[in-house]
Length: 259
Image 1 (cartoon, rainbow, N blue to C red):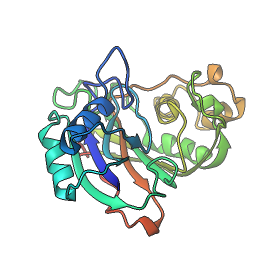
Image 2: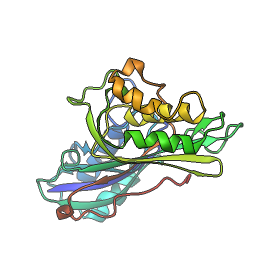
Image 3: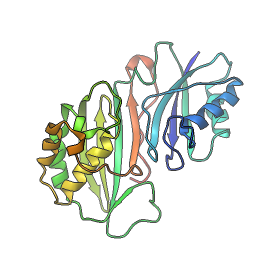
């Protein structure tokens, strides 16, 4: 049978989601944990691979197994074999046409910025520290230029292997609560480093180094070498993945506790 699960993780200790020969990955630990529960090797597919240091509050995965285990056993048995930085949230049997990556219709990320003069000891690697005062009104104005369907070549990594740079951004909101400034993004899919590159451009604009229209100009360059600085990974969270209602998955969006 095919099982879908939601995974929450602190990405700080890992080289990212995907297997790497040189460093531990989230995928490696989750597969080892589920393999112990299944008593056979388990291979998992995720909704979207995250980079080194990126967190997730609701990453969705699926795997196939012939092991007769309850959903409770998959979750609690898996968690018993996982480090404290990774947790399985729920499990559900799904039909064989479900695919964690290809069945997804929307994905959501949150980027958290600590905006004050002094770094925060308790939010290290959980929010990106920016000592320059940021104007969220300017950033919100700039964000409007990036909503809709665009060629995001200037906002993806040079090494990005996606066949097309065209993506549709449904939401790009900028909000502030005291010292925390938050970017909420929702799109049909994201390119490699796309959120971090958007964050870098918006932070530059918020600091007054560029005008809000610069976000649009970068978009129109369609050239990553003419784009802005890639923002750090520590403040980035994959917060939700949407699927067609026919799969009847549990609630899929969760916000990080720093907000």
